Length: 276
Image 1: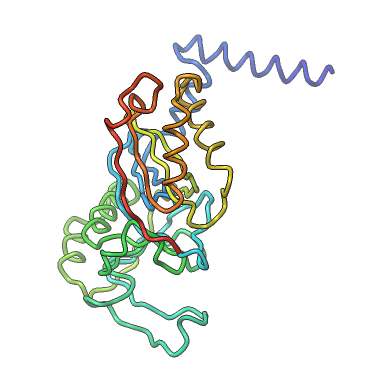
Image 2 (image 1 turned 45 degrees about the vertical axis):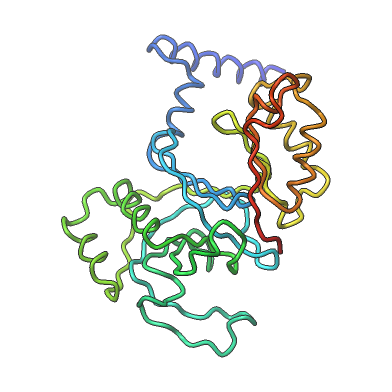
């Protein structure tokens, strides 16, 4: 009991000190976590979001792993960037008989790869038609032009003192392979959110991995709670129709349309996606 009181006194002391400096201790912690560059992947939504100093600045359509090669959720760190990489076949059944491929227009790794885990990369692809759905063997695929843009941003935060002209030369020379170690590692997180609320819209994604199953409604209700939405305002019939359609497609509806008094037709969008 005495130890608990001592801990409480220390915590209160830290808050008072921070307050005396004109800041709240909790706010200081959050601000510190928000500094710099952070990448966030929604595996269920096949979407990569970019945050700079806590502010969302970009979103990219990507492809994640197929159901049998799931992209794992977790918190990772990107420590290096490889421009114009070689592709080396992994020791997996699907790659039996394949040979290493040098950098080039048809290389499976594309123009850049960012390593975030053992044999897991954010990398380029020429198969742009697969973007927006699970299509890889666990990696995160991006359009090459998008990935070059992202890689430059990673270098801006990770290697701010990189020699001038280096990136321009690597971008211009698609067969020049070079791995650059980041002085400041970049945070990367992956999560499996089948329901999101952004800019006044509720989006529900198909549960491609079968991880949520009958708990999609619970995830939606949790998002309502996180955003301070009173569930009594939600039209249950409209929500039920969205949940049914989300089994095979991405569904989007404005919150105004979802509320009991809103227009049922306004703001709804259905987008077909292939299931695996």
